[in-house]
Image (cartoon, rainbow, N blue to C red):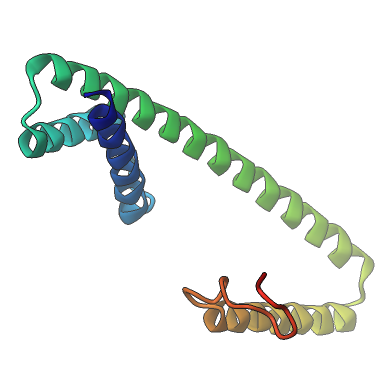
Length: 136
């Protein structure tokens, strides 16, 4: 019984994460998500009322934790963006107009290179061995 509950919670947590990723920037209500997951599990696993309550509580706790982590990371990203913009402004203040033009084109070129690297390193390329590595 406990093994089934643990497996169910893990499956639910995975589903919660997948749902959040699919929705992108949409707000995810932890209560609604927990309810949906609980109902789905109850239907598939024929949970008793007591199990439903326990599973719902676990799903709700997990969804709330994930939302808090998401919000924290969102704040960190925004702070980093603000710092990066402030740094860019300081650099721009030091450069001449001609240097700024060259610098802007350098930044655009670097951004294109980065995007190209991301396109080339698609899914599955992280597990590939580098030349000369034995994989042992």
